[in-house]
Image (cartoon, rainbow, N blue to C red; front, side, top):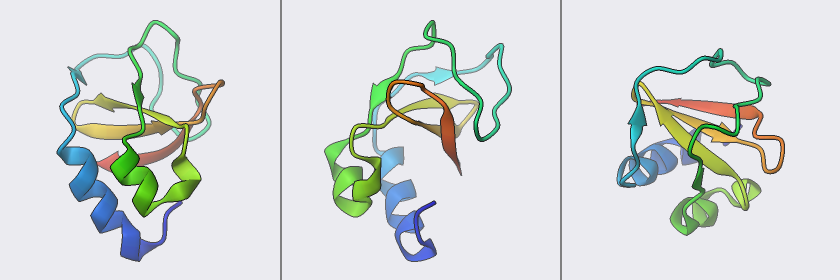
Length: 83
């Protein structure tokens, strides 16, 4: 998880992204859960990678106002940002 000092910057930056909110999903939103490939993933914006480089190559989705950070290849949930 990103340090507390960078979390505010990440939240601010990710909220500026124009992504489609998914209102209903058929999987649990918990750390470690793999998101089905039927969901549209968005690549982690370079602005966020500049803030927190550990997320280079990661994807994310927006579900009910929560930003879900996904591990590359496996699309496992690694972090949840409350919108």
